[in-house]
Length: 325
Image 1 (cartoon, rainbow, N blue to C red):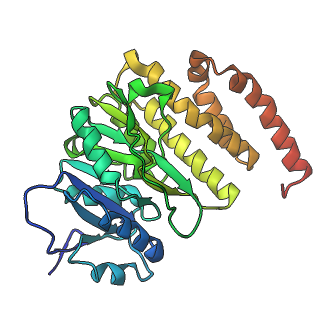
Image 2: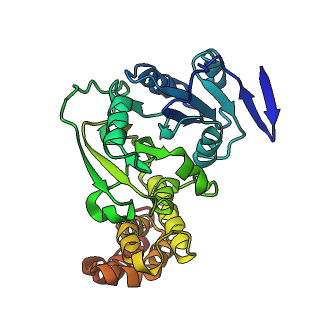
Image 3: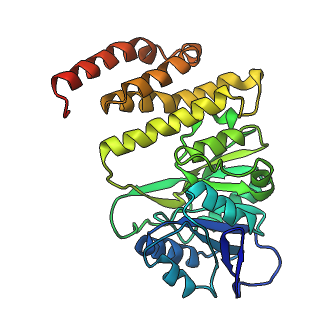
């Protein structure tokens, strides 16, 4: 049966009507039929089976919808007009029943032990609000054959802000979130098409309990070879989103914890600002520099504070001498 409401079409599935699952697996996708099949197969191969699977198509124009309709007995399939991954994930989460949301991007994959590892760590750490998995980067067309290990290790923190420099996030495919906490903050910021992942981390900054998986690897993170300047634009846009959100008071913790937020934020601003000036976005790069100048000083990022202005001049002159550079 197909329902339509508020521009969103939903195909009800014959998924199990048993008690609520521990996990709701949410996968957003857009024009990735081939890669999506790999992602779905990695979910179907999970040894831990207390989960439901929700896939949200974000307005694909390839064969994605046809492919998903053929799997409607195995998953819940939702569609929406193209609004970006943040909106797609929010839609999936709004239909979820699990205690935890486990996000997976349609170009990444899990390993057979992924949910098993997550479930064990969540139980042994008193059900934290936020757990982050461990990536295994790969660039091949075929998912990696990663050997299983019994070496299970993790770091626990009172909350995400307390993790400081102990962790670098690896996108939504690493996120396992208490559904109640996710819904309480309104999910991903739908206006963000860049940096919606770290933005969510920061808005969950003081939710009790954050755990980082150290071992084993829990997901295969596919590294795409994109155009350098396009990647720079994405990085700059994302950093600007984060800085503006902090300046607008979007992140919790108040003055008492601003130093922790700035330490996390500035490690994203620095590479984005440098990528911007290298790729001709001098004004955007300097905006990031000026808007975070006090933050950089407060954490002692002296190399960036004193090195960025002359580096900007160097790249500006280089582009004038060689405009195509």
